[in-house]
Amino acid sequence: MKVRICGDTTVIRLIKGEETVSALEEICRKEGILFATVSGIGAADRAVTCLYDIEKQQFEQQCLERPLELVSLLGNISEKDGAPYLHLHASFADASGAVYGGHLKEMRVSATAEIFIRRLPGRVGRIIDEQTGLNVLEL
Ligand code: ZN
Image (cartoon, rainbow, N blue to C red; front, side, top):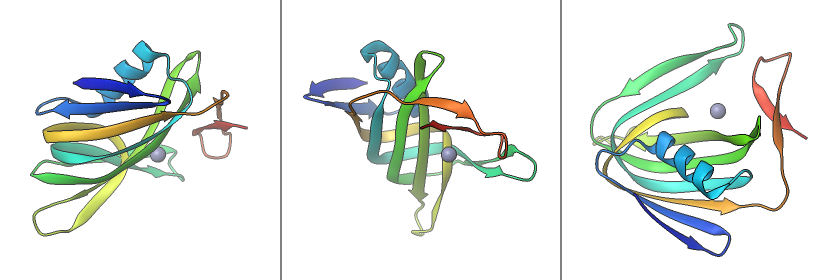
């Protein structure tokens, strides 16, 4: 993992084999990033995404394990219990061009990943929403 801080933006390059979500969590902890937006592109060979079933109030998980382009990684970072809380979504294209995606749990980089974390002013926390059971933005 290579990191460069350019003004309010932390630019990250991940290398083959690195797990993206845990790497971003580590950077946020290390840099004290508690409120930011995330965007990225790259390539992966394994991704675990999920879809939240509102009725069951649980995530249904799927695993993609083949060459994938990371078409888009989008997300935000807020604060929960004083620590960075990452909420990431991603879409992936396979060799046929079909796109899959969802709420991102894990992504293993196959070639590279270019991820920008842009700090925002202020602070926003998370609160449990009774209706959905989700940790929603506390606004
Ligand atoms: Zn989500």
